[in-house]
Image (cartoon, rainbow, N blue to C red; front, side, top):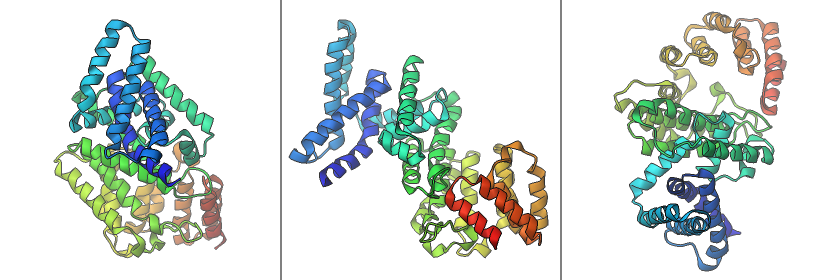
Length: 405
């Protein structure tokens, strides 16, 4: 069992590199994943007996490449076969830079805008995270066959649309990068605040998103939004140890024990934010949110938070990425910066937005503001409404308990 766990750990690290290199050579992400999985099966058979090789990634790539050669010899015409076989032979000693380029191209393929959002998430976790279909299904509380269908359809769509395996040209990089960052942040958010089930936090998903973000930041060091996303995720993840009580009950930001915050993650997050600023380019939505998270992370006590600076950052964020959720979060900062009357006015300004009609945090925020204004009955009504809309059992319990108080 220990040997299998070790092999699976190696696989999670190496699988994306193997799939990326094979996809470049074969032009088919589905076939590349199939051959990589074949290599993994061979490893499960041989490594417990012979030991893990010194360079497991190279071992897996060699086995997968040999399987590819066998497949090509069997399936392709002579002229085409010789051309691909020659490329496979030349690639045997691919330099690290080429592997990095392949990995970056794979990220852009799995997050291609041609695919539905749910399929991008599933395919990215499968090919870049090394997660099995069952693991992805458990993480998102979706039946395993549903995840399997999403992944299969995504690979078929990419093949039929002949999506090129390449890093986008500079003139389209910004648009395509936005889709990549969105997928990584969707994975993180599902880990940070689960959208279904009994658990409020799923650290495994959040950790996977942070790992993907760090990989991307090494591959695209001059992109401020990549560093901004890494900063945002690491600063938010630093609070994991304080976000829930021992019984799993959520603990809100004002009540969290900041001694339990992860200071190492905070240092890493602040350093990533510094790298975003150091690019000298305008900060986008992720970097601005990272800057907001930094204002929460630096103070040692909730009362030391610079709420006026946070309101100013939300004003900037509303300009580059307007949304009712941004305005809702801004209203919380206004509450602490300017008081409950100003916060209620900010909430009233967005109350008619249909996108907030079923968003439980709008009702919960409004309840907090009304309570501070002495409107207890109205606050309790909002809390009960928020509980009805809450996505997890833990949050529903917390909201109803607040209404009872």
